Amino acid sequence: MTALTKSLTVPVKSAAGYQHKPHPARFCILAWLLLAFFAPLSGTVFAEAVKPIPGIDIEVFVKEGCPHCAKAKLFLEAWQHEQPQLHLLIRDIADDPTALERLEAIAKSQQTAARVPAFYLRQHLLVGYADETSTGKLLKAELAQQSAVTTPTDNSGSCEAADTLSCTAPPLAKDDFELNVLGRHITLAQVGLPLFTVTMGLLDGFNPCSMWVLILMISLLAPMHDRRRMLAVAGTFVAVEGIAYFVFMAAWLNLFLLIGLSRLSEIVIAAIAILAGGINLKDFWAFGRGPSLSIPASAKPGIYARIRGILQAENLLAAIVGAVVLAVLVQVVEFLCTSGFPMLYTRILTLHQTGALGYYSYLLLYNIAYMLDDIIVLGIGIITLSQRRLQEKEGRWLKLLSGLVMVGLGLYLLVAG
Image (cartoon, rainbow, N blue to C red):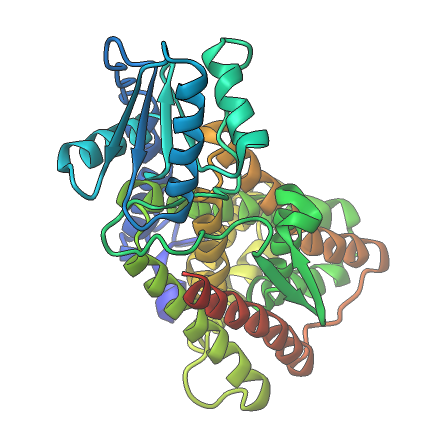
């Protein structure tokens, strides 16, 4: 038996009965589940709002060398000249360590990254400064209690507060973040974060690892000519695979929210993405030689065995349970196949201060797009009862597409930082 075959037993009754053997994969899954669902509690349920300083209308956090901070201070000076009764407290986090600590505490309580310039008023944090007609107008309206302050979702007009990052250039603003897809440049400014999320999810969905397993399952179920059973078993596999992927992405998101974002973390993420993309590109030209982010050949017999166990299940319920177990195992095995995409996307998402509900809504949208191709493949397989399997040539083209995107995004993170 292979390592994968022995890792978790498909709960299908046999002459030997049920077997349950502990395996490190279970502990890996448990760790990701804890990070995905309990880490947010530390930032939402237990985080307390930082109280404003009495007598101060707006507490402003800036940093020497930040061009957006300089523009913000000019606006504030003019505003205070117009309204002498306005009480401002401008704190430079580079000169005042307590100011940086307070900014980080405020940012943590509001589930966002500590960036400058930042304006704290009425227990709301506004990050970034564009100009008087946009950010300035928003600040005045909030101070007059005419609107609820909201931070721009693209972090435009702000700089990292961390000492490791220079504030001489804006971070990934929506106007300059772009993705090259089939020769076309797609930017956040052109499509917006929702459509950008869908685009990334669709590209991530062209994953030969999970697609190989799904097409294999459909091809083995097709000879039974039972479309209802195919839909129940393969549909369960697709649904659970999507849920498991959502959990893994939620874990990445909360990991970044917990450790924060520094220039060093950006470089590490970019390096991993470039490495993963480079390996995928290598697979296009030299498939089967050297390292590969694919399902290991040693694991494939175990997957075959599990699918056969599902086919031989005594009843539909046992087959569905087996499909659930297989879907989770495949997600664990294939996670390295697309590790670059979840890291890159969740890193970008943490720059868009949407709050917990917004974060998970975008993850859900991403995963719906991610599973769309599997749903289409499943539908075609059920309608046609196709026994066709994914060929090496097709898998290599999918590798080329994902490799180009990951390398491109990784290089952009290095250059834009």
